[in-house]
Length: 184
Ligand code: 5GP
Image (cartoon, rainbow, N blue to C red; front, side, top):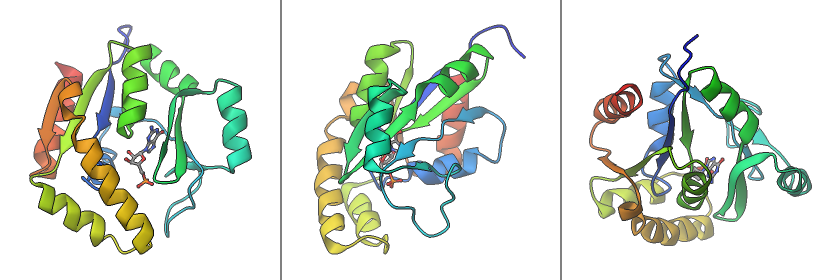
């Protein structure tokens, strides 16, 4: 165990840009502690409660907000998402680097409450590619796809608020960049 506190890396960017693919790849290595968020959205096929997310009801989520469980929380495309604070603080104290994969509004909240967080924005190679990814996902209804497209366009406008801008050309390159941000 290291005595130096770990770094908090916030990976954000528009929905559909490929953040979760990056995280899935990174989980094969031991570089980061990964926070498990709570969400009110329904599990997708294959998602396991407590692993992908803690899947909770609206009432449970509200109770967690009231009890100040969250480091940040936000609404995204009709569901709520939040990062439980204590596991993140524990991991940082133990010298682990922590990676939060969250949307923009939550990222802003983390920056306000933990200014030393390393803020990373993942952008798509092009807007056309992002739109294709969101449209072809196959698990969402047409209404939800339309909402996600509109949101993604808004989210792209936040890129300038972040310390580091990475383009998702190659998963390996993004992973290397994140690891070097944590270890440099
Ligand atoms: P999805 O429903 O596709 O898993 O995630 C939708 C969006 O919510 C993604 O942009 C993802 O990064 C974000 N997200 C996941 N967990 C959290 C969280 O704890 N807080 C915030 N603010 N956003 C989250």
